[in-house]
Length: 191
Image 1 (cartoon, rainbow, N blue to C red):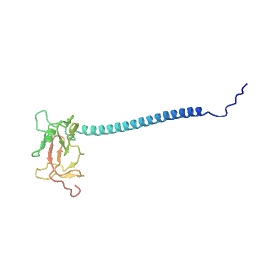
Image 2: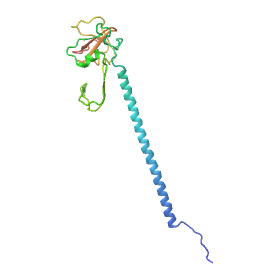
Image 3: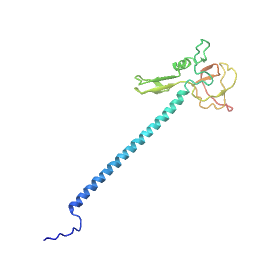
Image 4: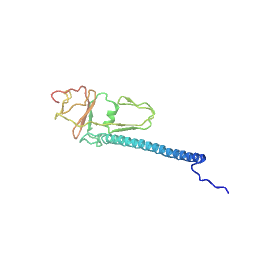
């Protein structure tokens, strides 16, 4: 009769099988980790893209809400009753967008522009979209009360910074407004 000896360790085949199984398991763990990392990076990028989109929409909405704003002057600048115009243009040879603004066109949208358009000195890329917002978009400032003769300068009371020569300005009260072009801007005596 043969006596069986007790096995005292692992055979080479068992070691190779165990090593192969551990390599397969490790490869699976690494694949899951890399997939999760790629998913995280994609979700992070998508979140950043959504936040940038929300910010851009918020900024555009703010400008669109202010389109045509004229203070207490009605946003409908062109009178429908046939009376005197609410905005008087005293600019000689004004660009077409000023006439359109006075007529009440405050927004111009272009979708998939096929021709070259230049707005504000910047040429628009063919095939892109744009929104042109018109209106006095700066904060209100006060000027010296009373009528201003045509040959006299307009004196701004308060902070006149931000105004530039050759810029179009709109001065109005609650019933009418005058559109003019600043020929020069100077500050003196705190005005």
